[in-house]
Amino acid sequence: MMRFLEPYSECIHDTLRIVAGYCFMLHGLQKLFGVLGGQQPELVSLLGLAALIETIGGALIALGLFTRPAAFIASGEMAAAYFIAHAPRDGMFLFPVANQGEPAVLFCFVFLYLAAAGPGAWSLDARLGRK
Image (cartoon, helix red, strand yellow):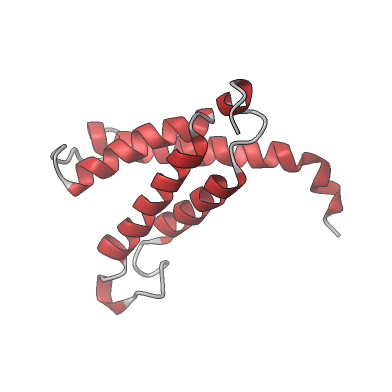
């Protein structure tokens, strides 16, 4: 039924990588520099480490450079964020919409997919001949 999208699958894959990486990077910049409504944490803390992973990892993912390892690390960070910060809230472990964990869950699985599927054709990895 949706076969009309098949010719665009590579384009959609690359667009997903770019947009997800960019949004992830913005979350990191929000934490790292206290911009876009964020608050700056201590750099030597879990939140500071998250800010660095999100800023650097998001930029690498958006550019498609070292995509697989960056996406794998970002996926792990989001899994940890969910279980550390969101799951314990009000006994709502299975309800990300209730514990404000939806972005963490979605980023986790999008990045896990990108770690498995790779960067796509519109990436610096592809340009540099890396798989």
